[in-house]
Amino acid sequence: MQVTEIHAVGLMRQLQIDVAAKDINDRCDMRLDEISGTAEIRGFRKGKVPKTYLKKVYGRRLMAEVLQQVVEESSRKALTDRKERPASQPEINLPENQADIEGAFSGGSGFSYIMKYEVLPTINLIDFEKLNLERPVMEINEDDIHDKLGELAKYNLIYDVHADIAEQGDKLTIDFSGLINGEPFEGGVAENVELVIGQGGFIEGFEQGLKGAKLDEKRFITTVFPKDYPVEALREKQAIFEVTIKKLSRPRPSEINDDLAKSMGLNDLNELKDTVKVQLSNEYLRIARSKLKRQLLDALDQSHSFELPKSLCDGEFSSAWKELTGQMEKDGKSFNDLKKSESDLRLDYTKLAERRVRLGLIIGEVGDRFGISVSKDELREAIVQQARTHPGTEQQVFDFYENTPGAINQIRAPIFEEKVVDFLLGKSNVQDRKVSKSEFLSIIESDSMN
Image 1 (cartoon, rainbow, N blue to C red):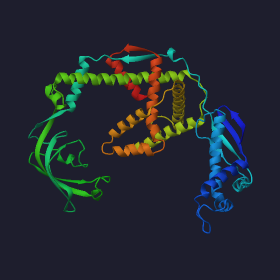
Image 2 (cartoon, rainbow, N blue to C red):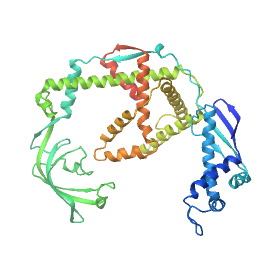
Image 3 (cartoon, rainbow, N blue to C red):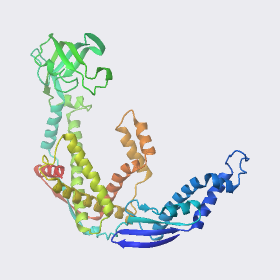
Image 4 (cartoon, rainbow, N blue to C red):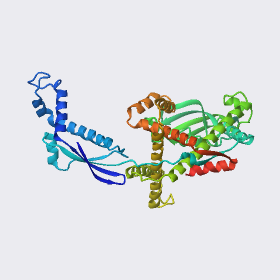
């Protein structure tokens, strides 16, 4: 094998790789030896087929396998010998001259091919100890805890029985029976069913049809099952329901007392306050770390300058742009709705892609330089956590990550990034700065807009 560099500008490389006929024929002979012991051809005993006859029968197919193997191994060896890391999968261009291909297939000649790729850039990392970062810190006081308890009380409603007419938000206990084309249907009859008007627990129109109902009243509600209803036989069918109102209840917030705590599985209000304080503290720490991480990434982006592989930037842009236009199509929006021209948005997303590629390369370089990696135990724990979010289908989650090529990288990449971020924060000069609640909330709002 002979490797000739025919182009090297910036990160782009183009190599011509010449493979000798002897290398091809030797590999072909090795494959013929491998199959000679098992080949079964009429007229010959098993394992006694002459190699010349095997080559006549299998030669062209075997040569195709051999040439593919030669290209894979020689291209990999060329990169190893040159100590280069391609930014993405190299582009392989086989000979355009059919005679060259036929000569290689017949074993009479070698062949040449062209490999094009971009190399990863050299990255000169900054001195991380010179990074000055600021972490916002907000102390939790009694007012914060009381506000959170108020939210809990608001969402943990108490329903009081009443004899007024049914309103939005009321809880009703009902009996119902439904007919389609005058005939009952499976699942169309139930007793003592509870529903809350406005929660959307029933098909469209059913809950709204109960507004204004009175206790013991019978109502007839006509509605249509949606086209995506889980029971296929009922999709888009019109049904008439006879509904009897057996109980009406109106919601009010819980009182902030021991009963509220007990409804949440705790002993008393003091324990609930302690729990809320811990939850708020953890939430504020998470937000503060997110803000600190963004400062770190901004600093890394601004303090490193190197040529970016075009293939990576193009791929990142394509992915982000596809996500944007897909969401626009789903929401029924145009570029005018986004108050920016398509060209301006393309420029914004080009800059975003370049930032992501630059930071990805920096994070990867830090990991390589300082030996940061993701262990099998960390991957296993992350997959277990992922499986727990899909109760009842845990095994399918495990099978997906085990059998789907590249899927494990979806788990590994964020873990690796967080480990590198933790390492860099440990090296940087991080100062805590106390902030007010209003300032802390403004930090949350600004981050959500970015």
